[in-house]
Image (cartoon, chains in turn red, green):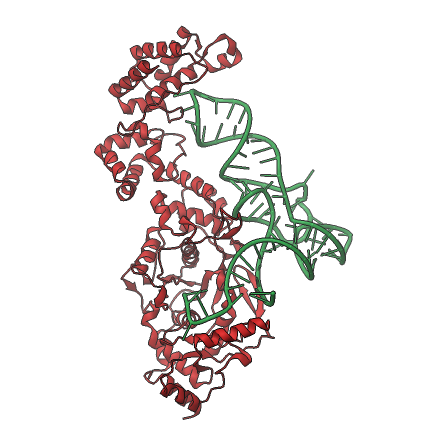
Length: 553
RNA sequence: GGCCCGGUGGUCAAGUGGCCUAAGACACCGCCCUUUCACGGCGGUAACACGAGUUCGAAUCUCGUCCGGGUCACCA
């Protein structure tokens, strides 16, 4: 055995397999020409982040539009940051937003597919096998530096304005010999395994990013860590091994990874792997309320960073996804207009149409997308969704809604079922409670703020007269005709045009009178069609409310 | 600070040297429709960061400046 082989045995004595073993175990995928294999590789450190949802969507749709595979892989190599239930949070979140998973973790506990395990903490032996091979080939070595030593070196580098990092003359153990290493290990010193980088900072590396285009950077020359002292790999190494063995064709990830891509490319080449295509996705930004600056959306500062926020607010998952699609593909909105009812998954997604710079998260636009979606739902769909939401987040409201399901559905049917132009006014379910409060006696709060240009006596007289002609069976036309017929009796114009042509001749118009009625019945100036509201409310309740108004005025 | 990436209306953006007197969407404003609101229709306000250069011609190519973002870990 030569020194490198001795070193490999010294460092990883228990590893008895070779890379070939795994190469044979995970052969090429059998997919059609051009099929793209993509993945999302989250760390189970908390809730599903908006950015993760976004990149997952992009990965998913890229795979879908090429009839490829989209899989999940859990990057749990950092025990310190791991959170209880982290895998469930993320995978269930993805499922909830309709991001289907072909392979890998498909729920918090179930794995699917033959390229696993899909959890890095369970792949230690695989990584170590490849590391051992690298050591044998003289491309990796042990480093015994402590955190303090590394820190000290960095300080010196900073003082002397030298690029920080473990490279060149600052790579203390780069030339360590077998016997030196053996002595240290016999002393029980912990070590990491570092790459013996073959790169040179003077040389440029050029790679084609599928979103950003050509990127030119200095080659990596840092002897970065491959295996941490606990034998678990760093992200960089795990990425190279996993995406090679799982045959990922397109690595699409957040653009914070651009700067380490030269490391990854060096690894792929040294390992003899085919370098995947890279696509770096721009982050979703937000305007910082304090500084006014545009910055990456942050889990700590922004509630909407955790995707669960949208669920709590009562957004439809599909609305959020559709909104994200408008950010992901600049031609998506045009497509959507041309295909208003098509499933977004049939949209032909093109990475080239992705924005190079980060988009500001636009809640107003999200609401617009969401309103359009909800306007297409019928009353029983709305009923199902609202009650499901309320059951989870507003139990008082849930009880009110379900007390009389048929009644509640009738409420949602107003201006919706069969309406030629359905209302576009609800963006999320938590708005419903307030929006329709007057339809539920438990929530109704009377309010008699009448138009200022009208006299109380006139309004009172009108309402008194109105209840004598009111018929709950009137259709929309008859209903309004009655108000129009009453109008002249009190000095109001029956016709709006008539009133506008000669406003001084009247106290107001029939429109003003219907406003009086509207406020009496609902406590609001603005509501959906009043005639329908009164029909749903029923004669008894309507009369009760009008009589109350007469009393108060 | 080094290294990357970016900068078109308030926002998302189209744009690949002449078709740009710069598209569209959201938001905003006005008018119309109208029982209110919403919807819908019509119209409007509003942008190529700045400076040089290349060119007959630049939002588009080059350089510089400024601004913004990312990254420099035994974190991902």
